[in-house]
Length: 138
Image 1 (cartoon, rainbow, N blue to C red):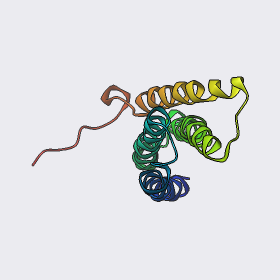
Image 2 (spheres, one colour):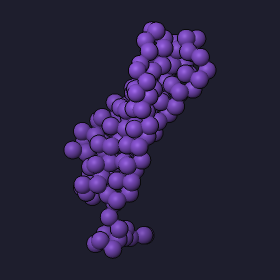
Image 3 (cartoon, rainbow, N blue to C red):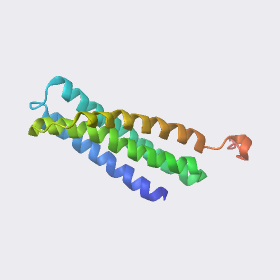
Image 4 (cartoon, rainbow, N blue to C red):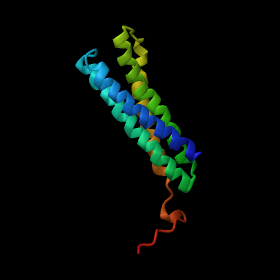
């Protein structure tokens, strides 16, 4: 499972760079400052959480806890909801499409999913009290 999420995280990183470049070069003249800032926020959170998925994949490989597995799913869902909704709103403005008002609730839902993912990752790493041997220092 960790290899699948390593691949997904890597592809998401590639897409974040692609979408960042697209925004910087193609959308800059088409969006107002507020929309452009929201788009940049989408790219930033996209990158951070793609890296988070890669890190969580490696942690899952090591400990294989259910909480770490859930963290991966929450990061992916959060990325789709948070960054995806901001991308959609920005592109919608460019093509003249207006999303229904309730669509704006998807972005904060994505933020909540990110938070839950980070908390799940915290609980997914066993403490030394749970049988983990501290690494020897040489």
